[in-house]
Image (cartoon, rainbow over all chains, first blue to last red):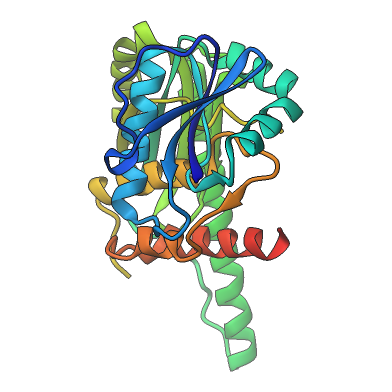
Length: 225
Length: 63
């Protein structure tokens, strides 16, 4: 029997419904004072897109019942002993991460550029080689300007939100359309209030379209490495 | 290329977290090699998905 991992929590386990992914049994494998919530799986069953979303709902359910660390989707163990051994190896780091995210949720803010990148200021030059270089230079300048603007947007969000930097994760310009992908870790009981604040802050930016999600389990802040 | 809608973005952000964030446990096995691709098929947004699938393939090769 394979175990498909969902989340790590401190023992004792919360009382949860016994249904895991696709209605298969939800299992608790204990290692010292930690444990792993997982679904009893069969290695020949392929994971599909709805399973990822169901994993998310399961992790949400577990996190609502007790502080937990979401495990990366698709992680499986051949036996409960393998799962326990894996927890044992990282026990100290897992405890530290659990303490960091206990009682907290993640809000996700994505800022999409409202307009495609415009390359301007290409001087009219003679010769295809020179023209190519001028276009490349203009494109480089446009990318640099966008990156600088995205960085400024992040700084403004952090300042306006008055939040400590370790509680914020962000990436900028991950693709042509995305200016900022940002996550903040907030106390679960204040998630609604913080989400409204984020919404108000992001609405003031004229050049981007804000997309706000969450509260979610603290996926981004559960890393132990 | 398809323009990202708010709905696409929300789904991509969530799927990105499920596949790229969270605790990475030592000694794990990732079941269903095709899983990542199946998750992204149907999104019709190549943009971020390609990057993530590439990264997942690199991870698989490295492990």
